[in-house]
Image (cartoon, rainbow, N blue to C red):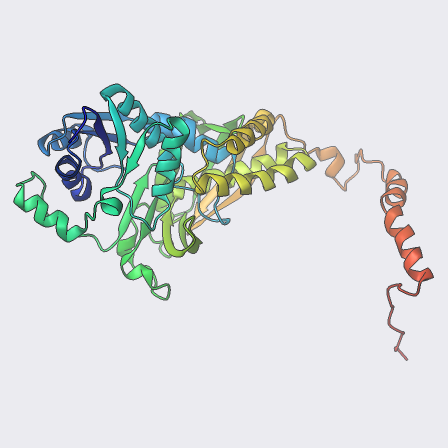
Length: 412
């Protein structure tokens, strides 16, 4: 028997989640509320997706244009953290899941649901991201996955859709599993599961072939406290900055990534990514930090950035650890303001110029020309004191016969 509670379903508009609406109703006896977000993935309009959800049997359809929210509150945090999982992947999916979850929980509260459903399998990272995020926001809510928990396989889906005359068009299944938003695009499965197979042209959508680039493109990006605010002198919002750099860097084939990735669930997976805007913006942001962060602060932040990316990848967006790291990262951005000039061409974003009123680069200290303000005589005392521990330790080694051996001079 069903109680009067409902299920909130993360609804994409595709076959899997369209079938899930009546399937969940039949298997659980609960009414289903469909929730859809636009995070810059493109494709069908929210209104089209909403009407399909209702036609498939949803009692309510909650849709929201979350592009600005995603760019402002999620992508910009990832940019400030220079977030690159395993050094190369800018967390395309990992940063969207907490935002989607927040709206799923909001809908659950609004529409009287006690369960949230998602379309993840038991092998992926996203099941963990959704369910840990749900628990972090509202521990009283339950989570269920039709594919993982209710044996909703693709052949069952197709037959179920036919039997129930669902208003969805059957199309040839893509050989890939694709997740995309404004920050980037993830491509996996199919023939890519053999890591010896090279990607083919049809894998890519956000980027053109870097082997045949157009004329090089010079761009100047202005940042204010770590956030891009102007491109080539024109004011932009975070969303506009990402979209503009997606277009320009994508045209040059920048941001193609192919790696064997360590998944949270303990398996290795072959993944392709396209993130032209993210890669170009992170490249520019890192170079501005090179100018504006104090040495020890910068060293610590590089370690923090790595851990931030790992924690967020591992479903810890709402954790106390990430909350504390966010405070450190935000504090470091106080003086990360200025301009970076880059050349975009043939798959590479190369920084060619940097300037900032808050830069710690001092020409008068750095120059070797006349006018140098650096007191070179001070280095004698610095070296003596800095090297003192090594000098004392070396003397002890020599005393006990453990000094570093120097080869005899064999030159005749």
